[in-house]
Length: 312
Ligand code: AOF
Ligand code: ZN
Image 1 (spheres, rainbow, N blue to C red):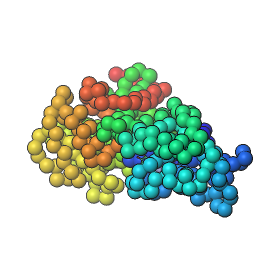
Image 2 (image 1 turned 60 degrees about the vertical axis):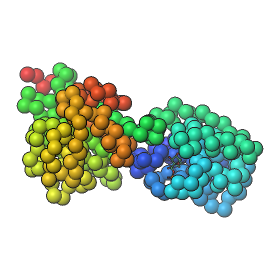
Image 3 (image 1 turned 135 degrees about the horizontal axis):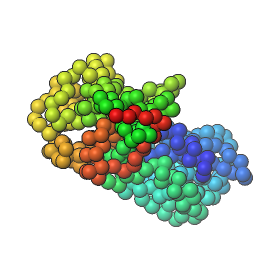
Image 4 (image 1 turned 30 degrees about the vertical axis):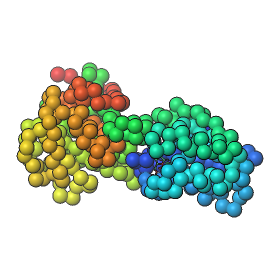
């Protein structure tokens, strides 16, 4: 199962809104095939695992799969049908599928067919890997990660408000991996004005996915001259506001009710969930992070601590 989880993790950033899933086919203690879900809309892990077995005899095999096999006809046919056809003698599942369309039905159908099913192997690890999927499929709201960097003396920015010089290379690489893994990224307009970040994903030697950039602009501070609005920008940039003025330089302006410190962030989460955004990375600055904690929308905190002293 540990191997199946490692395979599943290769799909990070590419499977949303679907889960990351890995699967292994084992017979007489030999791994005959393995696969993972590589992209939303593409074949499920079970299909890829069986495909990689080639001509090997697979009946009576043991299947290790990180998520309960599906029973529904979505963009691909139900995996349970594939399993019933290939006749494994045992299926080991890390966790039940929290998707209400599946939710236990896959396990039940395999057991009804006389196949032994064991559920709960490395379940904690499997749930951690798919924390975004579990949250989104059960609530319809994006999973929210708050990311922040501070110095030893507790500063998240210099005296002039600049925050891009806090951490070094290693943290920067992790940040780009986090951007790749999230559907959208949120910052306040002050951060955009002061740091002028591009908020894209740049991982050396690897292809990455760019998150939708969402800028909170409660006070008409943005002019459209910033990097996130550049004509050759990668992926869309949305501006969120509680006034009623369209920002012509953005791909979209989202109008929302006002809340403490600016826009009503709970209403924003409902809107983003409805638009299919399953995860949101908040990169600051201080006011935006404070408002997010105040609105209780944060699910996970990633704090980088840099061995520096800014002073002042
Ligand atoms: C995946 N990959 O390996 C497994 C999934 O739209 P579909 O047909 O791809 O179905 C997506 C649902 O299938 C997903 O929400 C989850 O409940 C179930 N299992 N999904 O994308 C997989 N095993
Ligand atoms: Zn499936």
